[in-house]
Length: 117
Image 1 (tube, rainbow, N blue to C red):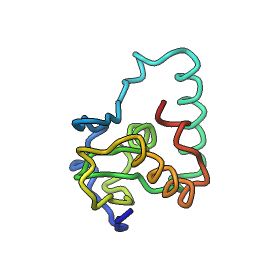
Image 2 (cartoon, one colour; image 1 turned 135 degrees about the vertical axis):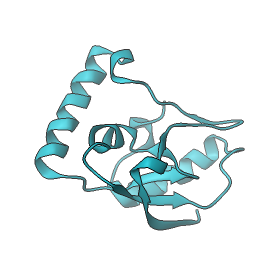
Image 3 (cartoon, helix red, strand yellow; image 1 turned 45 degrees about the horizontal axis):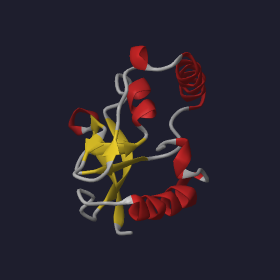
Image 4 (spheres, rainbow, N blue to C red; image 1 turned 45 degrees about the vertical axis):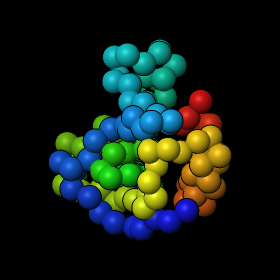
């Protein structure tokens, strides 16, 4: 997967991406389940105590991975470190999500299904 490390201004970033075959959905806090709100609150406490450790993963200024981190810290930062996907993701399939999983595992040590069902 082709990507580059960059920093993007907070004002340029948007949560989620709606492609032709794949979607990265953003759900506001109020629309989340009680369990999801509890996880968000734990993440918020960690980020406020320890700061941002991992870059956001983006495509054309759309946040694919890291929307909660962005939401929590956007009022506190002028810019965010990003891993910008350089491939055209508009026609991605589940196979491409596996490639994103590999990138994310290398970056964060996480599995994609923690973010995308």
